[in-house]
Length: 428
Image (cartoon, rainbow, N blue to C red; front, top):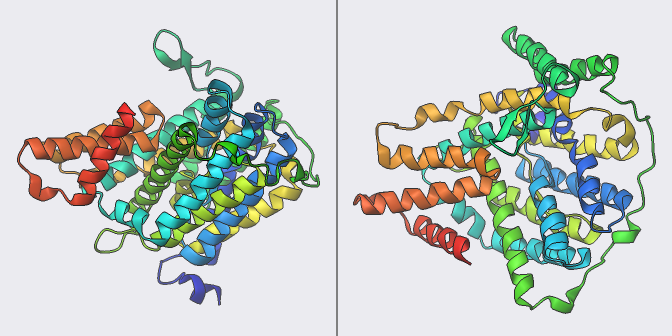
């Protein structure tokens, strides 16, 4: 029954592979259960309620992705979007968290409408194949950079922006040990190498005093303090429009980039270069965002860490079903899951970055009207710390360079409209 529903044989996978892939995806993104309450509680929101809202929205979004879209992608409140919610909308702009939740709720409703009318799908289909290949590679570098940062291998520098951290002790050393172990498991083609790498590194971290045992079982906190806490008093104001637009832009192109990049890497695109089941995937994102706002969390998006599960062999919705199940378990065993340190998951993110680079071989680097925009897209993602900005700069440069070089035939109306909107975004 499972094989027939998810078409495992048709996709060249097995139940065992999908289960391992789903668990791997969960372990690489479980940090959001710890980070999101930390971020949103700075606005005055109840941290326990945020934890429950985070887990439930991830469960709902990922379950829809699993059972309807049947794609191996997981969803949860996005880190970048949570940072924008907390530190920009609430702290820098001075709005209440109720105002911010209302903006997220409106965004979710708009996304549902855009998905129903196939507007989001049309946007994806307008992206040229060269940029689709570049998006995958750019995401790879971005993932690797996140892993290096999470482990403290790369740290902030006031003079050079970034620098090498203290890799001779503590979390950075554990991450490097984990990277070596996981690399050897991959070289020896051990099944479940990424998951084994996480578990072994976590155990080693316990002996190094880095992995902190936080207990096993805990009932999930009540979401009641945040349920339906909206503020519609300024729903038609210009400031609400600007905040909603920013949430819309970042979520749309983060999700788009993840879907296109990871499916390209996994060779899951249809023969005409489209992402299978993309409308259902977008609807999972939209519904989860709307529900998440009702419960009290920031925008839900498709996680780039899904690439870890795909790299482990996940190809169907069974992978995401397992990931959703892990989030259900995490509601009851949150102390145990939160014992897994960023140093244990960082090696997986770094190696997934390597896996994601392979689509660059399909880019024609001798055709500069193709390779320059692709290079800009790839470079911008890790350096701007945004998948959305990478896509934006890549698309604008692709349209402008091909217009100026009289290659108008390579462009379509959708690409030109997107380029204009991206340009306007930088001036509004």
